[in-house]
Length: 400
View 1 (cartoon, rainbow, N blue to C red):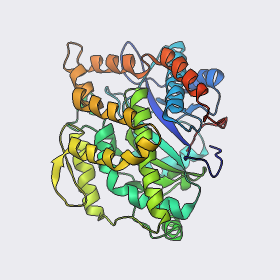
View 2: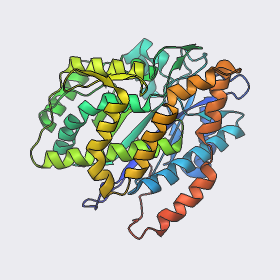
View 3: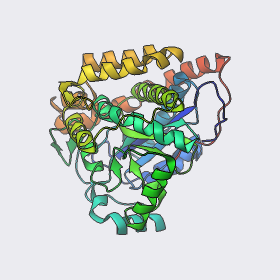
């Protein structure tokens, strides 16, 4: 992601991970190499790529300035990925975990780095068929990126609740809204990042992790907020991949607003609040279990509060920046829809309560992952091109 310094607002980009499924059996399908190859022909290698297993692919946006531009690219990426999957007799689904089984252990990609990962993480790789949404926000100054990470830590449990979209695992309902969160926090360097005093403190800790063999390389720092190892960005990796492109654009808009708010505080010397790790762990668990329909832990007070109240408080925190960027309506519409229709996990469960059972959940996801994207892509892209403040974006997609 090549971004200019001094832009009026930081550019941002998104990576969306999808599972590939057989549309007949509805089970995960190990056809990623063929699907990715076809998608690259249509969209370019910077915008789509493989993941660590052969059950997944990743669609990426270029750096964008507005949420409209971002949504247009998200919709395009989903449309192309769905088309490429159909050409290989498969379909894509946007869910944090597979609904049906056949994924333990998943078929892994091949390569020297993958081999080192298998040797390092061993049985953890048996449950790696999980899909997330990653948001990159332009932030090249490492010291500021670390301070912004401190500010974002308290917000991470609420973002889990807002984006929870993985209730099923291996043919059963886990009872959790985000089972992906539970799986992911098993890694030695995952979950909420530690509180860091400076970029130097961050680097010392990373060197300790490397020395202990807890990392394959810096690309396997899996904290939910991290300065990118390759790009001049701060990467926020907390979310399950949402069911729709509209939701992904709203998540990204909210995350960028929170980053900008935190950056302004950090520039004035505010290092961010110190929230104890044990309270973060408790809040993560409750958010992953309940999603947006239940209750969550206020990490500043330890109180148990309705998750939607915590979510509305979070959006209120970001509102001045959202209004400044013209993206408040997008986030408000998303939040109102969540309150009206439920989060991704609740919608999956409603589909599963129908006559199709778990197969019906997969059918629901296939239908909605790339729904309406062709028409919306053309319309939104035209509006974005008409925006006189729309600069050219780099040709290379966001990547890990």
